[in-house]
Image (cartoon, rainbow, N blue to C red; front, side, top):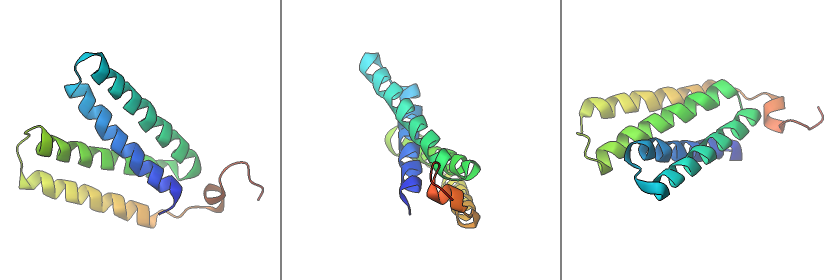
Amino acid sequence: MNKNWLLVFIAALFEVMWVIGLKHAQGVLGWAITLIAIIVSFGLLIYSGKKLPTSTVYAVFVGLGTAGTVTSEMVWWGEPFEWLKVGLIAVLLTGIIGLKLVTHETEETERGEGEAK
C-alpha cells in the first residue's frame, strides 16, 4: 500500500470520529474534537484525491467510514448486533477491495502533479 492509500485509510478513521462526534459530542471540547476530525478527514481526502483516482478514493473513503461507524456504534454505543449488518458490511468491504484492485493508476497519478513527464 502506498502512502496516499494509507492517507485515505487514516481519513476514513477520522471520518468515523467526526460522524460519531456529531451524535455524541457534548460541550465545547467534544465539538472542538469533532471539528478537528472533520478538517483532518477532508484535508487528507482532498490531498489523496489529487494523487489517486478521485472516484475510487471517494468510494473507499465513504465505504470504510460507513463500515467503521456502524461497527463502532455496535461495539461502543449499544447498537444491537445483527448478523445481517455484519454481512452487509462484509459485502461493502468486498466491493471496496474489488474496486481498489481493478483501478489502475496512471503514470500521472503515480508521479503526482508538478513532475515532468
